Image (tube, rainbow, N blue to C red; front, side):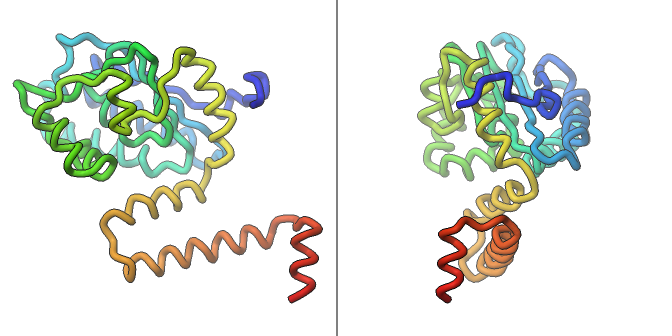
Length: 238
């Protein structure tokens, strides 16, 4: 693995997601971040979940549905970005933490992370995180979290596939993830991500056309690459 000095940090765009901020400010921050990476191949979005406290877990607070809509649209834009996204959670994470984790391409938790689920008066917040939760971990496990969940340790979040890695050295893990994942960033990542999303709801016949289109795009990309000697010999035998 390359070291941190090999990282072009000017193409790593970072934002702190602080649940103590108003939802409108958070939506604006996410939209700004998405705008900054557009048209910049190889960009990486790094989202750090700001540490909160159990008494501030209420989400989304005193807002109206228009505020919620703006937030959901911002999160959707992040989810569809061509830039690869890395989410980092440390300490107590609450408020918008689940929303952000569920749209991240790679999710890192510190060993001491506790994820407070978005619960108000014992009721799970019915935002789009609920939809993504089912898509991500299935109805059975999602039902357990929605009906009985309150908080998850880092180990439990890993077991439920809400994080990809639990680290005792978060910054080193972030550096390694940036080096490895930035190679996948770009339009091709967005296409593959969308194919994964649609696979859960589309049947084979509806999916075939878009998969063939993606395959055609990939074949054209591969043909444009310099071929190895082995590839050239195989082509010559045809």
